[in-house]
Image (cartoon, rainbow, N blue to C red; front, side, top):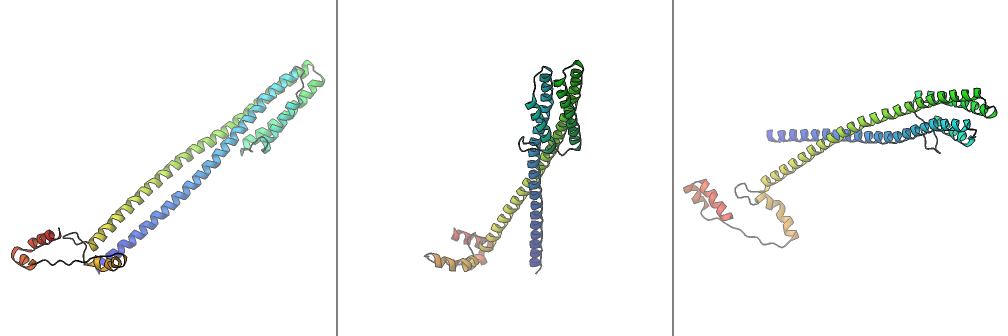
Length: 266
């Protein structure tokens, strides 16, 4: 009764332990899936931010090039329209340029300021076209330099925003590595437990069906498997009776009797 009660307790403990390990595995697998999804979205966002930085830089460079061309009496209306489109796309996102709207209050604020200054700069361009005097030229150059500084600040904010995402992604990679490492350890422990349980099962099976003295199958084995064997194949049955075993045990001892049995079996 005590042995049975102890075995029942061991089974309950094993059931609880296996359940806890399963729950832990599910928790870490769920965490890994969430981390991987976040990493995917952050990687996608980095690509979008890179395009924002690139096009913000295009606005900065192209606006200065447009001013130089206007000062050389070359009209660049197509280029001005192109820059209008890019600035709007940076502010509201655009499928045409594959631009996202940056979730940064400072960037959006600077971009609105940049858009206002761009309208002022365009008016100065049109004024210079009509009246290309030295005063209007100087005003255009001053506004151009101011606009370049604003564009440069916008680009810097976008770059900092992207660096923040990269930093977060690196931290995410570390977290993913830790979770993967834990899952590997848990998997190894589960594999070890399975191997140990399998070996224990083999040992219990051997103890239940093998004779401890000779290693051959015992009576219980044949009682359970003989009916199955007789249905599935032809067989021959041989009985062996050991002569004078009792005399050997009585005269030479049970150790000699055991040795006698082993010699007969071999």
